[in-house]
Image (cartoon, rainbow, N blue to C red):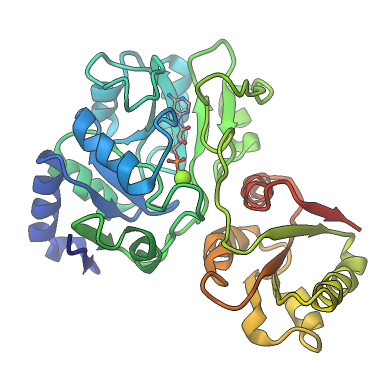
Length: 350
Ligand code: AMP
Ligand code: MG
């Protein structure tokens, strides 16, 4: 299959492209599209056969459920049997935006889309291209991140093409994603709201709207996953990644030690670090082996560039990677959640 990329600079000039995307989606095909979090791989969320193509294109385990994306509040009712008062408050405060609410599912939503769960995840993306495409399709759009399962999520159309070329007919190119990490997932079906995956809508922001939140649930490996990434490998670069956690004053020295050790073992190390650490490593690590994900402490920039940095050394001559950590508060919780999964739990504390 030929994969076409359509660059959309102004949605007003793109009505023919949205009409075509809507037609592909209603016909049971796949379209990749930008959102404010990461690029999604969309299919008609009420069509089990169409959604099966998502699982096939990604190589995604079939018990890992999909989020349904809607264009407006009215469309939430096409996916959810009931919108709980808690979910109404979350939607009123943060939709459209980087948050997904878990609600009881409608009968029309195929069980294969929800991994056999009786609940469904619903999200209204804060991206004009995404909402125009969903409106053109006229149905909730099931969309996981548009990457091969297990790989870093795509935050540019080029990253989508790297994983999806030849597998899907159309990629809508809306430029780089604003937030760069997937939506916060909030289970709104219980007595207290529970965060199933951290994202740019932080625990603090949710607590302001909802009051006290439940502590994160523990996963049972034998059950269907309640949230993304809780069970499967996620976000992994090709070369193995180790995180380096150190006090600020020890950080560059800790990286120097790790890089020297790796070189002594005959390896070709590369690093993913803040701008400040990059400057302090310049004498030891050549620029092509350094990816900078933002200024130290600039969490929005670090989140936005995280997945591009995790993909930066794929296909290059790096065979071990080291990445800097961030403080686990606010948006840092989401960044560290993705980094720890990308590293498969390998952290060196200095
Ligand atoms: P992604 O992994 O990037 O495809 O993001 C979508 C994630 O949303 C999936 O991995 C799911 O685990 C999560 N999700 C979707 N529906 C549900 C649900 N009903 N309950 C809990 N998590 C869900
Ligand atoms: Mg994903």
